[in-house]
Image (cartoon, rainbow, N blue to C red; front, side):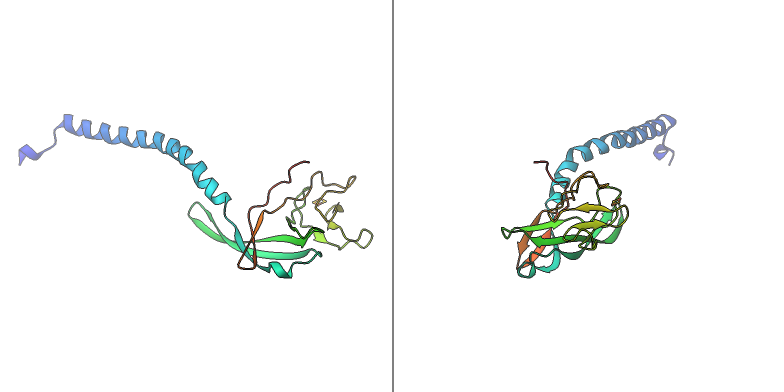
Length: 168
Ligand code: FES
């Protein structure tokens, strides 16, 4: 029985090994995560979320399209609803614009300012954008509306993550 007892030296050695391993893992984990994260991010960036909008129903008139997806923050999963203003331009190309005003983040609407028809209008500080999402000079927003990448699948519109428009 006394042979199986852990000596003081062994106990110290086990404890130090355990603590050392724990600290090493603590230092290595961020490095591994740092190395792997871009791969995961790239995958997430390629995600397109289905919307209830049929591509064949999209006209030249911007319409509001709401779509939902599940978002995971650490261990908490929630359902997020996002919105896009969607229409086809004169060449038949689909344009999907973020409704988030580039001034202070209010929600812009289409064609609700009677004095400036056929524009996106932000009621918070009277920000305006032309149909293609370009901010109207001398109104508060300093940048164009973000643009959603899109694709068509089974006749439905899928949207990616809205990105700032590249400057021409
Ligand atoms: S938040 Fe849109 S104009 Fe200020």
